[in-house]
Length: 168
Image (cartoon, rainbow, N blue to C red):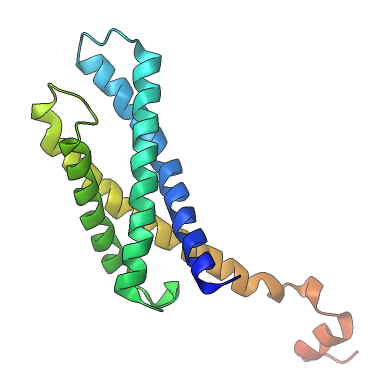
């Protein structure tokens, strides 16, 4: 597979990972908003579903853009060479920008003026947490790949005895 196709696949994978993490949080926010803000005539299920879809979409966009920004900022560094702090800061900046865009675009409708700073703050925390979680998942997957061939089942019995310092 070409280098660019791998990068595109990785960015889409990051976006899907973030979307999967953000959707349940969106559903929770929808449930809370439905309880706190009276007058939603569309029902709890619709509010929850709409917020879950909105958050999933924002998570996908945020994760994809984060992957692009990460590639630009960190170049060819491997995941085990990256700082968790830099990862989280880059995610937080992206989350703040994404939250600002969502608020500016009016994705939550009119009458939400008092909640807007909180929404941008939540998006900032979501971005930082998602970035840190992505790095943790990537490192964990990398550890599994590195140790996948280390099981005793992949070594023949005579080789195992030789490796352990025993005689046959």
